[in-house]
Image 1 (cartoon, one colour):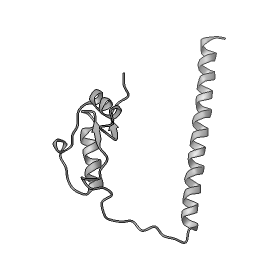
Image 2 (cartoon, helix red, strand yellow; image 1 turned 90 degrees about the vertical axis):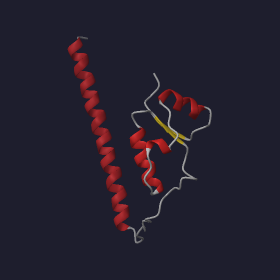
Image 3 (cartoon, one colour; image 1 turned 45 degrees about the vertical axis):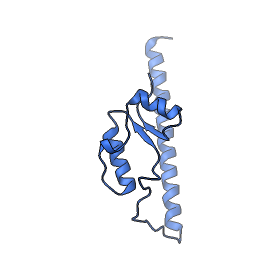
Length: 112
């Protein structure tokens, strides 16, 4: 089989897979919102914080993701934090700390 035919077949298979994923996502989206519309109960959203500094999961992050993680944590606990207030390291050390059980969650790139 020629290289052009292989590329064409792979492209067609990729398009079919993407189409299936999109149709599935649309079906799930429609099902979820139709259930919400038919529900007689209305969910009440709390304005309170989800976590406090004391019960927040122990998080570490790579150098590049630290500002993002700090913003997310600040949102969850309802107060502004700086990167220095959170015990960050870097990608490699974050993996080591997660494996050792010192952290509950890390936001890093995949290991090389």
